[in-house]
Length: 223
Image (cartoon, rainbow, N blue to C red):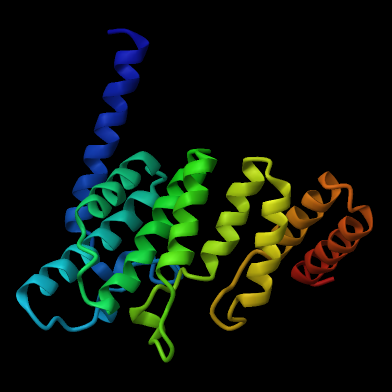
């Protein structure tokens, strides 16, 4: 057996083991502290059979995708998201549609991990642009990735070396985020902003964000 055949066989075995884990894993064991983890209990009650099927399918997708993503099976998770998005109906209730934004966010996250920056930017943009939360929304049953999509959109733009767009999106995220809900890696963000400004020739601004990153780093280390 060649090296490539052996590598392919090991990959298939790993995916098979993950599939077994998905089928047997209790919901309470799926990344309970992850802000993007599946939250089946928050799904809104269905008013008819068609909507019930959509909610069940969406909840199942979010649950399975977290397992795959925790195992860094980005291609397999991406395939789940793509298949779902290809068949979901935009005529569904608005509360169902809003939560579709989570699917777009996770799709973008997988594309970002696979360094498909152009595709990732489109996915994060779709999450942010097309699936905003209505006024008075309940956090658990909403698109809780809406503002975070700006942050990851910026990361994808940085990966694509579009420094102007990345800088603009990082600042937009800082301005729009909910301080209580939208947690983020502060040192990384301000460091990335510094890089963007430096690449754009804005050296004073780059120095400012680098200093903020250093302060945040010291604070995280308890210094």
